[in-house]
Length: 451
Image 1 (tube, rainbow, N blue to C red):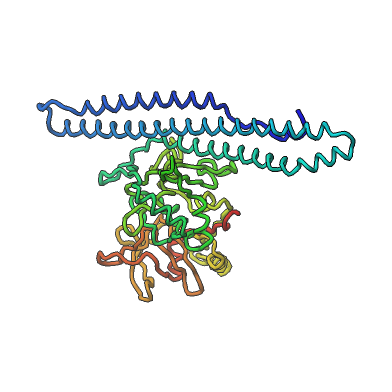
Image 2: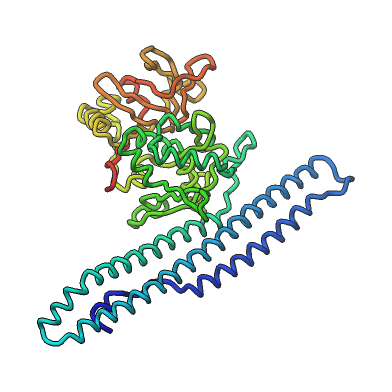
């Protein structure tokens, strides 16, 4: 093989095997459809069976039927993803075979030239075309690799079955709902136009304040919003917007591997983060991506692996930004003397917010003398007025800014409970350094954003 032809390597992949796998997976989807039909038919109970036992039976059958239906839909999509991937590999391999054949012809042009001068002239003549074919080969390999990532994400989503997570009110915090077409289009428009705002984060039942506070802080700056937009890309199938490919720069399950993780999302949590209109948004999509990656879903970390409930802000900042974070720990002092954040730490926190780096404060326990039913009552400033609000222990707040007068925080709930009464108060407030030190155990500072 000639010099130019050797520049064209193999395109990875075995299309025949991939397409055969697509057929096998499609057969599995058909079998799951049969299982769903059988499970749904089992709901038909004799009229003589009534009461709590019958209701419990119906509930179990319904839940199982819905899980089978979701799995069937996902597996069928996975079959389509494999088929698409197989055809991409076959097409690009055929394309590169043609490029290699043309390179052989260009090799012949140079090899048949007589004399050194003619060979140099022939080489110079064909080089522009050689460069074009080299670029086309690189594009083919890139196309196949991107198709592999997309296929892997769709396969993972197709095989994902959300873990049940019932709270005390009987709500399944792991319940998901399909993104409707208008939601898909609105989120895609928000991403394209940079409409990604911290106030669109409103944490609900899932205990992922650490993640949402980190996202809130990222959305505070134009650089952070651009980074989020780069993470979440609309995904189209046959020209139709069907969901989003979310690329987490560091895999939450293996953050030290140096590899990211791409996840396909077309559902969000019913009890997850929503916008002010209680509608899904880009933050809901990222939250759903995390829940899909974690083996334990919305549960806390357990024997199955990581879960959404409970986590560290510094870990989330690293996973989301692909940069190392640092944690500023409150000094414990000796018998109360010297406890809190010293001047250097306060300056460090203030400088980080001024530089546009994402910053999150974690709270620990609440001082006993300030407790009211498990939360602390603290005087803060909201919209220029002094107010009393509940300060939540074992929680995470976005650090919006700080100066010598205090720290401005945002609660990812989207509101704060009042110190008395029932009317919710604004999410963003300023607290004195002294009170902040009573509640905050540490502050996580992101390292900025990877290029």
